[in-house]
Image (tube, rainbow, N blue to C red; front, side):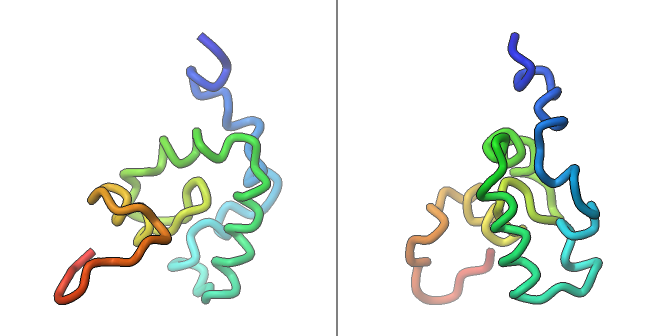
Length: 91
């Protein structure tokens, strides 16, 4: 078992170095610029995949560099960044 398997990966997460509320823009009133800044931090994080794995089913916040909506699309089988189906579609 590696440190990443047992949850110790969190100590390597870049988000531990800043205010945790940044990853929950719906609580902090952050807009698009806020989310973009947070995602930039995530892109540089050495444990981004572990974070996404943990947060995939979380309802709120940015996890592994993905928003609530993006993770919802992932759970439904869509690839984030690809076109969404036409017509009425609720995420």
